Length: 224
Image (cartoon, rainbow, N blue to C red; front, side, top):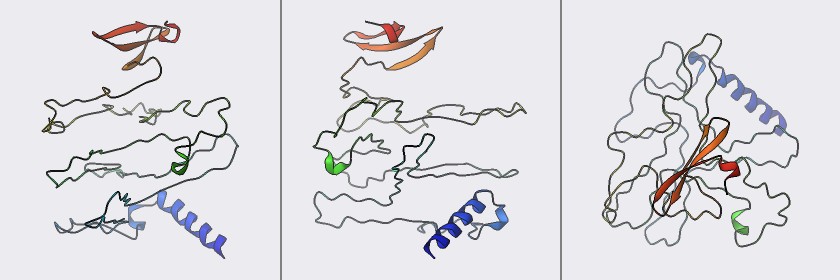
């Protein structure tokens, strides 16, 4: 019975992924009242006054794999916003916001925290059981920007900008007299570090921080 329920749920999801707008059971045709929450899937967690060293999570999505077969792909969470042909309007695939209403809050504010792990949090203080080929972080990217290629029709495809900052997106703070688009001043990298790497002819070039600023290094794969 349980297998039949799971199969039915998966079939329903498969149908929704290619559904016509008229087939959706939840339809939004007007803006909600100002204080209202969206009537979609919500996760609410409250840290009560007096709590100390609390860790609160509004929503969790996890995918686990124990398979050695090649070609597997795991997604912890997937969010898509889709504009059907003929529709118009802004499309936001995912919004991750921070609302800090405490003027004396000394804590860090992170709109998005991308964490790399090679062991469970409970094992943080322990070494990994086997280093082996040590490919734990091979081919890793904290943020990966991708796109479908152009179709045979030749339409424009791909992001027009990899990262774009709005007019009021950056500002100084009470203790820091400047704002930075990218800040790597606290990064401690146990290897040669480049701010940016690009293809220059048949080799790769990199912008390497130095005591006097930065220097362009050619053929970084064979640089001393």
